[in-house]
Image 1 (cartoon, one colour):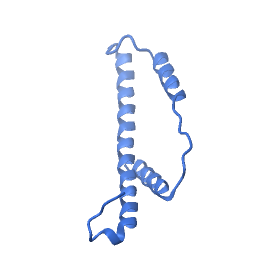
Image 2 (cartoon, helix red, strand yellow):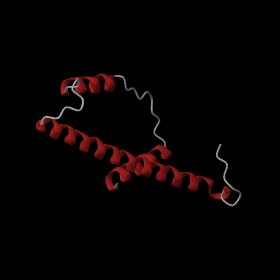
Image 3 (cartoon, helix red, strand yellow):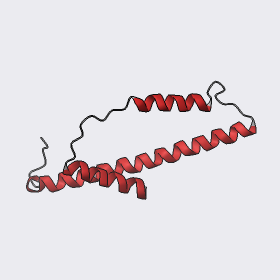
Image 4 (cartoon, helix red, strand yellow):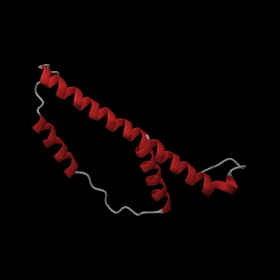
Length: 100
């Protein structure tokens, strides 16, 4: 149950939809920044490998790929019910990733 102030109570559904959209937008922006950071870190590690620096000598590319594959096998979504609010969230998420 969402409790809004009395002056927003008549507009509770519209305010909820706007907040869900903004929440998706913010998550999209954060995800895009995280992806850019990961790509830049990978580029930095590749460059340091070619220069001859070893920041983490016990990790190889094959062990990283094996870890990613093993982790992705454990992800399960179950039964996701698509509702209007989830759709609005994903629209905000997409716009955040696209424009972020």
